[in-house]
Image (cartoon, rainbow over all chains, first blue to last red; front, side, top):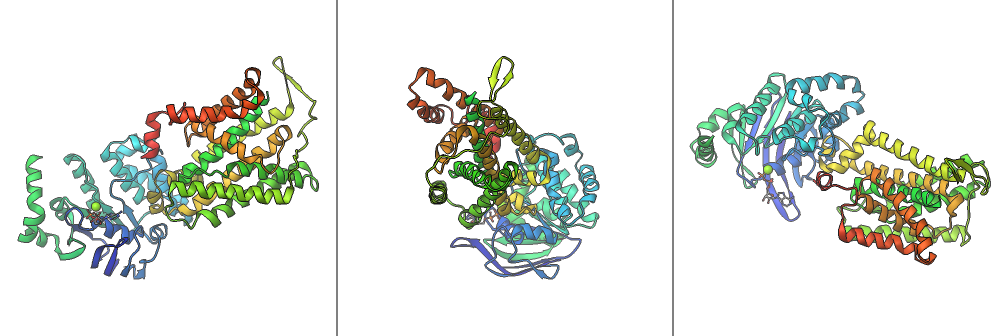
Length: 245
Length: 286
Ligand SMILES: Nc1ncnc2c1ncn2[C@@H]1O[C@H](COP(=O)(O)OP(=O)(O)O)[C@@H](O)[C@H]1O
Ligand SMILES: [Mg+2]
């Protein structure tokens, strides 16, 4: 579904991604783990078109999307749930969700939007209760649900999520991760970026480890979970954190 | 009652400021020129076609000018600084004024009263009002209501608000943010031109009448809290009425100084505007 070859990108003179090569098959949950500043967000932004690719290629459904601006990438069926939720704060929950359906309206599938709204409300019943509330007044967890719901409204073939668990309570994180596995069960494909490596590998099929802009390891999720290096560098800290939970 | 007429046009200019500000974070100092262009073009067209057609034509032409300005001067700038935008929009305003001087000369012009003449008056609850004042207020009110409906109830309006709330997130939804900015210039130009047409029978219009309006409109926009169009209506009325009462207590020459005094006072004391709440400002800035 997604095939990236030797991708490089960065900000100004700073090169962040160095020859990143990876792929995602349809129906998979693939996770990218890595420390703060490794370039995970930059990678997702480059795929989504927010950050221009310097070299390499991004093939989505065998077509190159490397040079497309973000508003075109969504139309191809690839949606990003950005880091830090980025909901439309001064607008209502329902308006946020409607805006997520913009591509559907443009593709002449506006008639299906009603059902799609029911579907995301089914996944996140909390959003239905808060329908008329301004998105900026929601709790962090609810904003994350809204950001995911908004992305789902475009009916993406691939949904990319950038640290959906960031700053959320353990119970809320569990809900969000349950939704991610549910999406796979319903035929979706997910690219999940997480610092919470244990949780992410727990639900993923495969994973990549990103370190200072390079993929240093890849494999089946269980394989990575039992890898000593991964355990020391990325799971040890999580064990401490989970001890506190 | 002149105060109400001026208040209406100030409010309209302020709303024009707000629409572009909300979409881009830019203060468009050429906003007053849209009002002037609307009035001037309508006057010229009215010599050849009936008044309603002339006004419609003026609004359409000014809207096109708004789009051209955005496409030529603004669109290609990549994250420009505020100072650069101020200089560019002031430059655009000077440019438009010079072109207007060239085309129309220095003469002061006016449209005929939409209904009746300059001496017609309607009795309304004990006071006599010129029907043109009612036109101005009525058209202003309808414009505000339509704009509010547009921004809150239509998908296109929501797209514009989404871009102003979070440009990147809007693009991730598939919205073409660049086009929304062009649209904001077009709407601002259109509403400015409409305002210019309805008030010009009373206030007159000449090539240079846009600049003072921009200052007044900016004062009103700040007074109501930048970006807040409902408050701009109230603030516009306050300034218009203050000005018209001031000639009883101050020499008429000081009338123009009032808005500057208010502007400075507000900027020092309450930059979020008299109607603006800190809460709303935070949500907006985000
Ligand atoms: N907008 C930006 N401008 C300049 N440098 C940035 C920007 N965003 C991120 N970086 C740099 O790029 C590197 C990777 O950041 P990021 O992709 O956010 O990592 P991660 O998401 O893995 O924490 C970091 O060194 C960071 O300082
Ligand atoms: Mg990140």
